[in-house]
Length: 451
Ligand SMILES: *Cc1c(COP(=O)(O)O)cnc(C)c1O
Image (tube, rainbow, N blue to C red; front, top):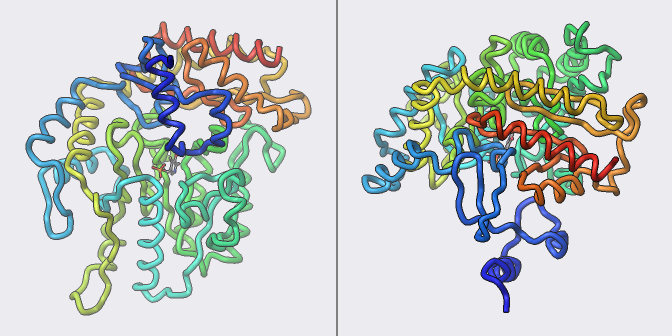
């Protein structure tokens, strides 16, 4: 006789092809069937608790089954679940744009709605290309992106991504993107360290702008944190210098804030640390508090105006997704912004972030395989290396991070290392006791696996 959970696992594996997984791994580690969630915790049918320290893929912002967000969605559910968004509109989308305008970097005021992050990147790229086409620069047909970038999984978004694990095999069908050596503060390409750095590595970008700037529509970047690459963090001065280069060469700056937006870095948006405004900003993940799939490509009036013309000039942005502007998602997103403001979430998260990073540093920095500890906001990452002096990584075939992941599950912590980078990216509402617990658990798992 199978238990209830065993039966669910069997039925799951019968049909479901899980994302970003080698399905054969599930022979050894079954999918964990979650029954319910509350706050930062997830619960199995047996009542086992898992602390969601990765915010369920970085999207949960204010806890699972947050009362206010749930009520906002329930209310919307009995009012209007969905309506076509071409020629039609609804109050929650209007309210959301207004609320966001209050907190966005200056100049961002036109909202294109999509239903996932990758699609927002695609929309941003098409928008940028068409802008240049319609403003007498049809030679601008290419995109730039940084090494180690991650922007999603659809063909366009994957093209600007630079993490081989995701894109290598698809190279023959991807766009020919100009790859810019980006900042890498742990293994600095200029041989500097963060303390004496003025983002000298901007020179690599400048070289490409000199060569290709005239043929480039936009550079797509993750501001300050290259999350999927292992929570690689670089200083705001790099963004300032990149903004200046973009202005010089009439290249759009597309800021992919899908992972960094909504207080993850300690400010509302990562761009705020540098005081810059991108030409297009992409948002998703935290946008709905992790409730509903929705994303935005937000741009300036200047770009918008290049599409605004009599219909027969054929200048419209003919881009659409069936679920554009879904009212349920907009209702969740409006409530998220109200909660952030009314409950002073960012102010409190800043205090927690300080505590969290201090504790992590105390606990981990002397371990012989901890090469780097990096943090911004509540994001903390610990890079494990074979040799601290040479910064040489472990053999990837050992799957060190994965071994730690399995151990952590036993201790009820949902760590999900990126390669050999253990990281924490918890909901902003995490409390001290949980921080203490996950730090100690992660450390014990690390010691169990690599000594
Ligand atoms: C998650 C993510 C995306 C892709 O969003 P999806 O909704 O998964 O398509 C793009 N860029 C960044 C920085 C992300 O973290």
